[in-house]
Length: 226
Image 1 (cartoon, rainbow, N blue to C red):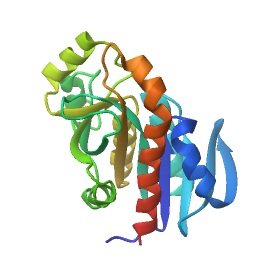
Image 2 (image 1 turned 180 degrees about the vertical axis):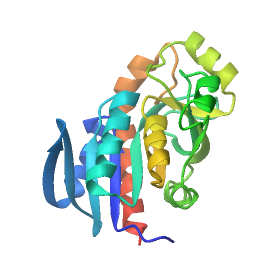
Image 3 (image 1 turned 180 degrees about the horizontal axis):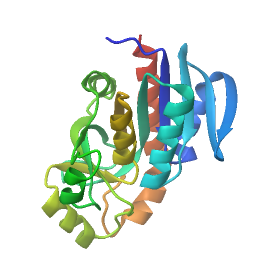
């Protein structure tokens, strides 16, 4: 296994990061461009943690600033997501193998910098997370600036991405920023809703438990890194 001296951890919402923040010791807070980063120790490992907020732009900004100011050896993303596959139920864990943007055309992705339709996670990191997340599924996660809340939306996305397991709003933006900087990354999501007409109610009911389940796997994984 590679040596990871400093680990970056990102999530979109406070509910997704607060369990990690509580576990950290020797914390120091830094602010860059109005964005807050907390550096400290987690499971004996030097980590920097940030809550980036919802959306691709926020996720990319926080990722780039984290890389520029803290030089992490890898970045891990934890949070909740909507299910895109019948086999993926609420509270299931999904570890990304690759990600793409569902709200950008493949033509644009292929022919505009950095000329990637798919962004692949680091195999070693993803396997470690998968092994720590008992029963987790590995595969495709899609990202876009939409909270999917209708069966019609979900059907359209499934036609375009039949292999997708989960849909969310930040993962591929983190992947994009990590890719252009050459930083290994991995992403885990716990399913809070089924991305259908009942998504908003389901999200409210499962958000806390799903966020904590995903974050607990990241904590365990950090402890396993060299």
